[in-house]
Length: 495
Image (cartoon, rainbow, N blue to C red; front, side):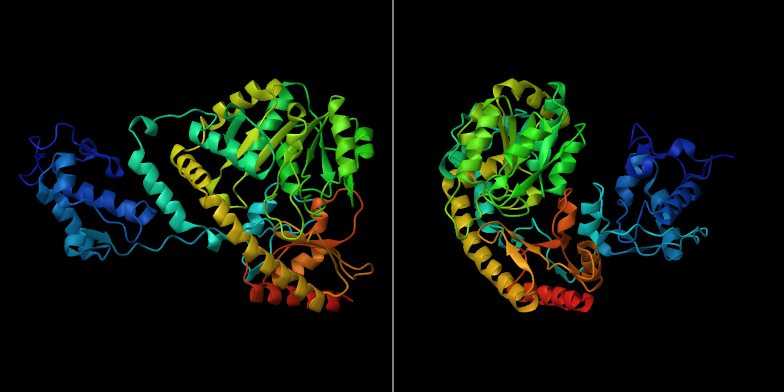
């Protein structure tokens, strides 16, 4: 069968009769059947979701040129789908998919019960599940006031960066991070954390999570497969290290911070600490305990210092970072996740010379370095003083929200004890003995009533009081008070 004139390929318009759009290739069309073939391929794409409702089809002239066919072939195929009600012409808006056939009913399957979210021994996927769980009021810890993100200051810095950006700056960068941000971080740490570091010692990471992953890999290469961890201590941080290491033995934390005698007893050559604001208790490592720890490190021990939300102080003086006292024995990690937004995925890691090459290799093979443009914008924010102005604003807002949560706890949970109120973005509550439920059961009931919290037992492997970890920075005071009132009712109901 010969092709009709309307179905004949127009070789003058395209040397290669094929389109990136749906990977259409006219060689697949039967002789004389170009229009039928094209209409069928379009129907298939609408039916299987490759062309969802709302998608715009290419202009007839453009698709005809790419396929090397006459424009009439494409127009006729579009017309057939329009007559079937699947597409519609929208004038200058083009031809748009407006309806799709109903998908076939899925085959019946055996229902499997979902595991409980607040199980006593959660896996690494639990934080993804908790973030996705719907709730009216979210009191999860670790969430800054994202509504306060300095959009105007960020935009000004971004425009200034783009105005001065060369074409060369848009290429692959240094896997350690841009020189501008490494220099700005070194200045920031000197001003705000008492840490003196050369910009060449700074490695820019995708947040503290990646800093822990890179550290775990480098320690493993050096033969260190065991890192002790505070208890109670951050479940998420411990999970990141445990993914790369053989063991993370728990070390108890008391009112003075990590117990160095118990650390020695583990025999672990390294320890993960949050000394400036211990997570989740809020304890600050005391001077005597700090001296004990530095003696342990000076005898060959290694400290991984997670400087978790150290900038957020309310009622206490600043505490210098451990890295300032013993740089050769401390791997220091920080980020802007609690200062600006976790979505920026930007942090830093200072590494002793012994591990520097292995950490850099792990970073290079992970991603070749962080995106350059956000690094340059953040560097400008740091060096211009905009970030410190933002920090002062956050301290006022967070302090008022902390006060609102404490007042709500006193009113609705009078039997609970508040810990760690002097700094940070969360409170730890220990609940009275004799409660008629576990903290995981209380968290489950709270979520069923639209309030999201974390049970304290998630973060403790050694015997510890039942309790909750409640974030106060992200929600308005009225919302926080309502959430705590729900918790109070549930506690009273449990007896």
